[in-house]
Length: 309
Image 1 (cartoon, rainbow, N blue to C red):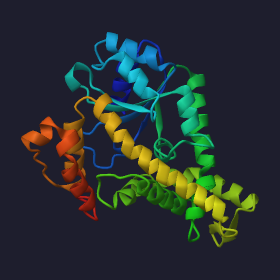
Image 2: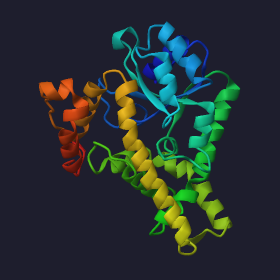
Image 3: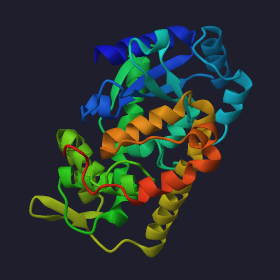
Image 4: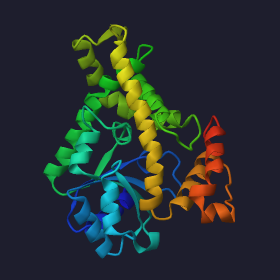
């Protein structure tokens, strides 16, 4: 975790005291085949968007106008930025910048989409916090999100599950809720890397569902006590359709907020699919216009199994 600690400390120093917590998730935490180019995935909870970006720019670590980043923060939060101090000598962090209010909303009972929620019910480490109280607050938010998992997973439980089975099914639903460039079995690899996490955090969730009459026991597993009410099922289907649309729209935001996004996404696709991608000159010059046919092709022809799995 040394790399994550060093990067988060550098980010906090550059941001001038406007960070409340830094959370690590993703391949570097789970060790799902990261290579030397793999970014550390951070969620950075900040007290104020404008002040955070102003100080980050003043430190020389933000190469976008403060007004632009602040305005983008109000549209489909969070903003994604690349943080690579000293020309990336200590690595690169892909940071999702989110305010305290937007963070609580994203993990709350009425999330606007599943972008943060689907990632943060998985294994997460609080690698930096402004105080012990802030670390406890962040853990409380994560705990609350996990305790509410049955609110949105109940319509997707077609067979009895134990705690690990709930985690496996959860990842299938969450990965299906976004267009992603990885191989189609990526959710399986991610599950295998954190099965112990689900085995630890989800037994109380299933027990509470049983006590509330939402679940019934089937041996050592649990199943829905009754068919899901049609309106509830429609509500969460609408939620995931909206979430997929919002996640796709964020791609356009990332192109604005995330420095050097094109080589980053090319390396990511190559790492997860085993393909070598050579962009044409016109694709590099005008990716918003000419890269879409290749992007659609990659999505439609993803391998069924992740390279090396």
